[in-house]
Length: 245
Image (cartoon, rainbow, N blue to C red; front, side, top):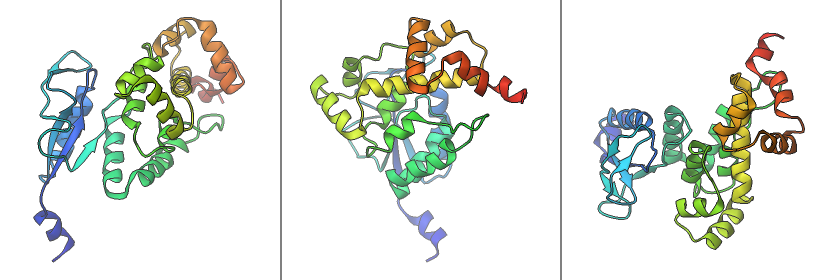
């Protein structure tokens, strides 16, 4: 039997895509369509409860399946957050066939080692964090990145992870290798870098975009992480600066 015949004769897969309030409906639709187009997969919106989910743009989505109930999924994709849908789809396909470590390694090669203007290596905080665990907090990291302008205190993160506060802090720190607060700070810094590089937004607007109330807070945290202030960083690494070199 050829490999092609083996593929088409094998049982179809049930794929669950995790959904929660704030899910990007476009990313969800594109990914569901991509999997269903092979005719070898059935895609289900997988939620934690039976309650309808409100998407990023206000639509109500009734989940197809509830976690832990009914037929088990063959694959479960993490929730869509800030990660582009195509990249999340590639990650999920690789991870399903080759495991979490290979998926992270591939994502690093595709994303992290692209060079920024001026020679600075791009750095993806969610990928770096996920590389230290077995994917246990991948959905949480994606959720943080897509809610970066909100209050992301440890208590709220523990609630999103469905753990008690004490258990969450202990397990997260042991698994990822840093505290939840440090991960939030690092993801905010990554978002600040992207805004400084690709836009002309004033610092006040960037602060609000990434969850800081005061410009001074952004300056202090940015300086601690990178050794330069935000405007110095923009002068060196922005798209406008690159065009002028």
